[in-house]
Amino acid sequence: TILIGRIDNDDNVDENTEKLKWFVESKWVYDQQNETLLSIVSSVKTGYEQQIWTKKICFSLNEQQMKIMKGETVHLSGQEENDDNIQARLEELKSKITVPKREGPEIIINNSELKLRKYECEGDSLVRMTGNNITVTANQDSYARDGKFKNYFFIKQIIFSKKPLAVDKPISVAQVSVQYQDHQTWKECQDVAIAPTTNTHEDYSFYSDTILNLKPDTLMSLTVRASIVVNGNPGRDRSARQRAHKSLPQPLKLKINVVDNLGETCSLIVEQCNSPLNIETKESYLKKLDIPDLIAFVYADDCDRDERIFTVIYLEKDVQHLIIRFSYGTYFTWEKKYMKTLEFNAKQNSTTELELDSMNKTSESDEWKTTALFDSETSLLYGLRIQLKTKTSKTEETILLPVDKIK
Image 1 (cartoon, rainbow, N blue to C red):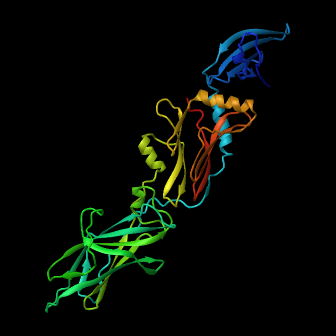
Image 2: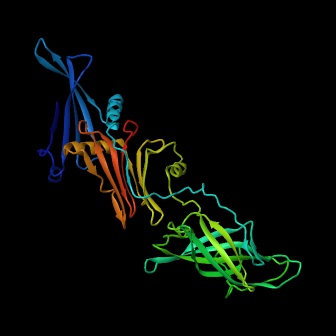
Image 3: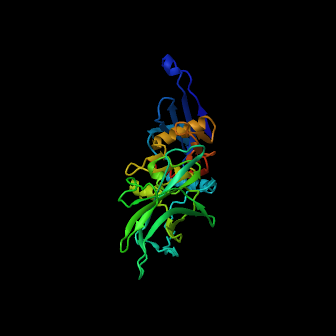
């Protein structure tokens, strides 16, 4: 039998103290080895303290004299419940944990499986385009206009030359255009220009036109610029903008087309592949924290912005406090005594769930919501329900806490 009471008035307390909430829990505990021994374990908490005070009053039953003899009083504050009992109950609760719920797309982080193909220059023109070290870099406008922006591509280190002939003929590049492939269809790019190749993509001196006079036995290393109009919004920071937008195919095929002064044409296809996004994962967080494992890494992706929001739960080194860390930049440290306080509050209010308002946050279209879960039988704080929401995705996951390890 569990006895629960509240201390509301006391002649020895002042006016301010009377307004504080007191919570008392008492329960009978029988000695499994000796039926004549029993005790009352009482715990008390006040509204302004996280600490819980616990004492055990021991009794001895004298059946012959029909008396209850008082024994010693033991101060129990700081002592833990039986670890075996906790572990057994956790195993029972574990079976009730629901599978994670996910809605919406996820960011493809690792595109290392994409292999870039090398193409040869094709066509009847005497102009040749080659390059063993061709690279393609990308950039985006900083802002969208009318729901659209330009995604720029810089095809670097294209070697322009003239095909050797027995009879030398002058040849010039009269026009350069660029196309990109979208669902097996070649579409025209905009803002096509050429410039001498430099070490950076931000310091090009583009020619006013795309006319080039090619001399025999002369190689010209050039950069070709082109842009694609994309629906949506560009990346929010520089790193997110230095890539092809997610709506474009990967690898992205770009075809450089040349028309010479004789009306002949040639073309060269190159491929662009985005570098892996700098997105946090469970593995990257383990490396950052230098700890053996995480209790949980729960995330939801915003695939419009190529961003991830997350909640990380782990045990702090050495002290074994529970750390709950959020991608919006805040973290919380839970000690065992604080969890005990939450358990007492849950029992006092007869609830099995408690929304943790101090942890919850809404920012634009992103939402973080955390709910503490309590065992209906023992009020044990056994888990957290993590709910994350972005513009494109939603995740809900229930995490079983290692309550027997938290100090």
